[in-house]
Image (cartoon, rainbow, N blue to C red; front, side):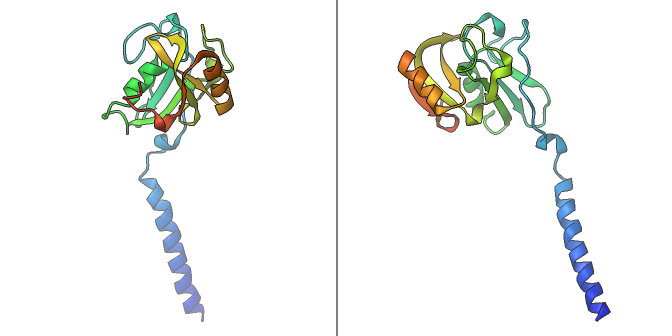
Length: 166
């Protein structure tokens, strides 16, 4: 009887160790979530090189897998232009945009960054950003609808946005 319990104990212990070791091959940095960072007065857009703080409208930030550096964008249009390039689509780990229901259009405030993958976007409004037409970003569908009624445009979620829509 004790030999049977000993054998069962070895099997359970072996399985538990196997599961623990399976997680050891993953990079702990990849599991850690990043947070949006402040846009400084001299930060340049990762895509076009323009000074980000010089322009109105929502901005964007992204973190790539395996990198700690943040990529900052002068507009949500530039952000999506970068994200939708085939070589970048699978490299991006986290993406942030301003919640424009909480911050002024002319000078978005950095404490109002939200997860872009959960945001609602209005494309085709009369409001412009650094590169002219831009994607207005909101944390709720209701806020995006209200903006759309006032300034025009159509609502999209993150995964619905394609290069053709831009």
